[in-house]
Image 1 (cartoon, rainbow, N blue to C red):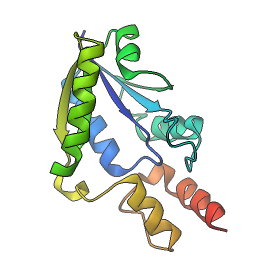
Image 2: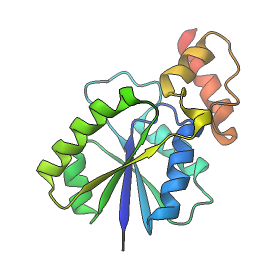
Image 3: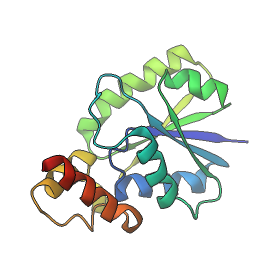
Length: 163
């Protein structure tokens, strides 16, 4: 069985994230989307549990996709879940340098683990969780940026934090 991990902070999940997850689900037998707890970014807008629940809503129709959360080394998580690959979405060339460094680190820690890069669909190349939060905080419409299933929750949380 070919198992892929799609890690990220997903703070919040965007249509770009869901696009990469859907495309990954077509390639691998099982996809584990892992909400990573980043100890260097302790002030997330959404809790890890909230991000997990948003992702579950957005991927409920994808039978081979599971959602999980983890706060350790991705290479260790992959080994413990018998994952063959880490799948990362790339929006632009600027994403590549950091992702390449992470890929080499993961390969060093877990030689059985491959990293696969999936380029963003053209309509989502500009989109990031930070863009979503910024646009929403200033009252902009984010309906084209985030999945409908979680839109209202995201808007309410960002309004709460701004108040």
